[in-house]
Length: 365
Image (tube, rainbow, N blue to C red; front, side, top):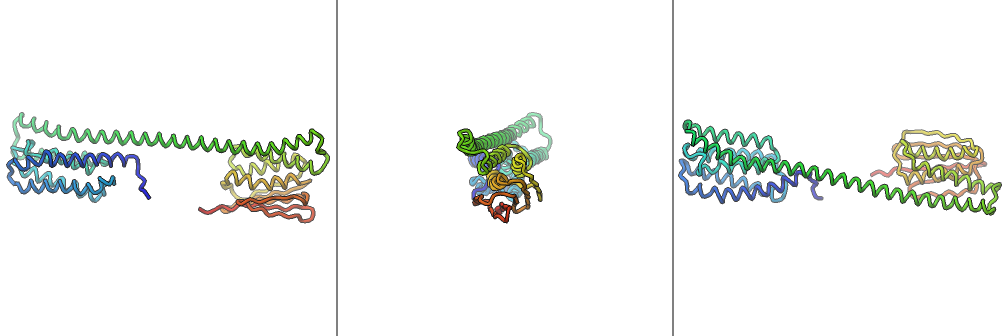
């Protein structure tokens, strides 16, 4: 599996690749010549510092080129090595030649610190300040220079640090803009998902309304043409079934805290409008039930209540693992109630009463 990264990690990874290349070019392209050509009090110390800085860059390449963040241990150890190498390189030259061409480590060390501490800005600023203070302290240890020398040293230090601070600012701006762009893209994705979900739900509702109204219109056409007798018990049962289904269908579109209870209540109300005495009992707290499952749970309840003649009792039991709805009604015995794959249905006629139970068990993820 690919490792998921924050948007800012890609910015830091790209900038570190640039910094590795820049640090290598500066060290071997600009700093190697002064190391070989200038005079030093302790040349071996300067050479050791140069090699140590090159080793830090080489070790960082193992993570940078794979676009992986640098380990904390590497950052801490590398920062300590870079500061020690800076001190050694500065101490290797004569005090009166510091902040000049032979002091090649003054600007180079900042690029190594950028490479190590790019994503830790406060630590980076602190370490850079410590590096400059140490270099300035070594510079002033031989005595206070005149204004011209001091001004030249200040200009050299400012020029070295100024570019490095600009890289920090550019990186922070890119990091912030990347976060903003990713947030906008995620919000657009959420909006697109909501639109697609709403369109899918609308198509589903249209299909349900079309199916339900199709059966209702055929029933109304039969009554209007005289093909169906309103006094016939089967016609009355079909009318009651269509009315209950429509009430349940309208209830599915309501935004309520407990949709399942709301839809069952709509079925109960439709039966009570026909004069059926219905008692409704609920046990357990509300649990989330998918809309399609609610439709399959209430379908048999609609059929049973529409067939009730005078009395019915509906009970609902909800737990964390399953939902059960039971109906007892004085209904006719020739009802056919089909079960679905997600909802189980059990029913039977005992004397004058129809006993029905539908249940849905949650699937554990």
